[in-house]
Image (tube, rainbow, N blue to C red; front, side, top):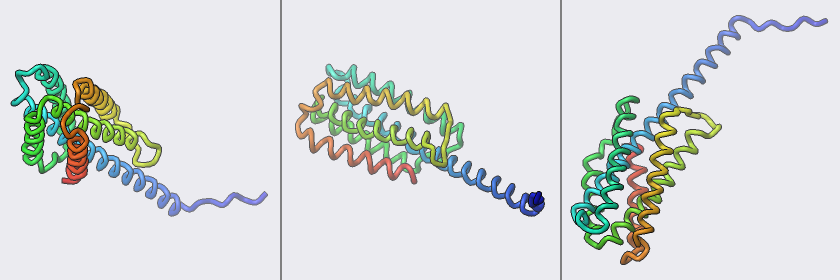
Length: 204
């Protein structure tokens, strides 16, 4: 029988080093992905808080005020959850928090000035983008292609908040969002602004 060729210690060392290097790179890529997700989600929940705050200035004492306040309370809990993740994972928050605060408060205030249905139309538009955004994040985190991240706390946080954002979307429809003046233009503009903010907050 022909003797089985022996691998040299040098080749074994190179193979082991390559495996460790690949594992380290995958870990780094996963860490960057998680950082980006937590950063943009914290910024998004800050924005949602500001939208509802702005709406409540105008509609706080109306029939829709109770519903808006309930959604705002949930958004405050969402932001608190991502604030904890920012601290736990030592993520750099978005540098544009002051911009999000002003821009989203203004969006909430402006849509509320157009009436209750316009405020609900804003909710429908923004939440539809956010639900889509969270679904994309979950698919990315759970996909089989590297970097595959299986952080159960992060996954469960995104799932739970995604479901509550979907409830907000449905609540907006139930409260006459589609009967708002300039519904198509209003929702199109709100969606575009929301998508642009997401892209910026992922990086800045």
